[in-house]
Image (cartoon, rainbow, N blue to C red; front, top):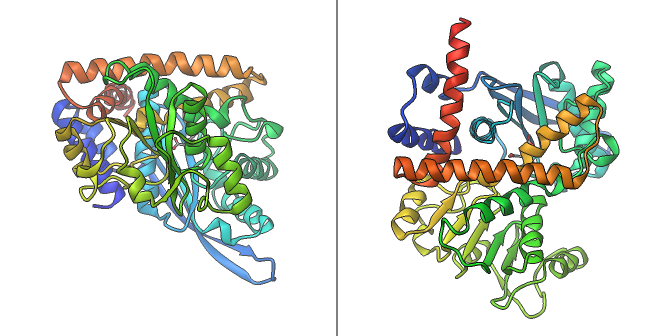
Length: 411
Ligand code: GLU
């Protein structure tokens, strides 16, 4: 199954325990709008290269489309469609006034110079700006897209439209209208969800954790768990990982990677593959990279007690069943990684109101929201006697159903 088929299978499984109207199911089975474009970019050597770009506007039932833009060689319309569907469910579950969308460009960003990358980011905005805007569609960072890239995009949008409010893009750097706390929001959110559910899922006060991925989310997750006294036994980048049963210092690992461009050779730790990382003994396993990491091929070998999904779609539905059978709890992506889009929404609100909130205010507000929604998901799982993924979908579906009823009245 491809990513979108997996996502739709998750939906079908949830509908079996939490039925909704046929109308809502029909709306959630397809995107409202999908656009693929060719973006011409002048390379540093003067040649022109074409890049494929995407925006999928999946659902506007609960508000403007919302979701990141991914720069990755494997990005394609099908992956972006799945991610846009998950954003729809994630925003509904968080209870924020946003629909779901996602964008992308098929590119290996490391093969571009900084100038080429900037031209590409601006090119994406030129292709899509008529479909974007603070009350239409609000993109944000995702895999390989940084706060700086969001500033280029936001500035390009302002140039093309004359809209100076800075509210059409979120996840921007502080220098161009970003929010305090947005950089840390996804990993901090994952930590708050973990804390809210820790005793429910039977974890001790002090845990061991293995983190796959060292981007904004994976790196931030290693830091926040380490700072709170937990033991980070493994970390990895896209090439490989490190394992130390006695614990890694995330800062030291990051410094080493900066200096050596690789984790290989880091002292007092074993150099392992990303596949090995997933199968290590630990309390909590955090996939924080790409989709489809835990599949029927390796699910049986997972030793963690809990999988905290900070990537989108890291676990296949077949793997879900195997993990459930083994008694491994999966805390689903649409809950665990929703801190990013929640603080994006706070950023959008600050931009529209011309306000600037403190980091403490932003993160306190996020924690309150995630405590509440984590409890909601837990209670739903108890009520429906089902796993946390189906329960999280059910909470989201309940809210989407209300919006669908209102929308139907207007037809
Ligand atoms: N890319 C992030 C996600 O998958 C954040 C989206 C946003 O902030 O709009 O949730």
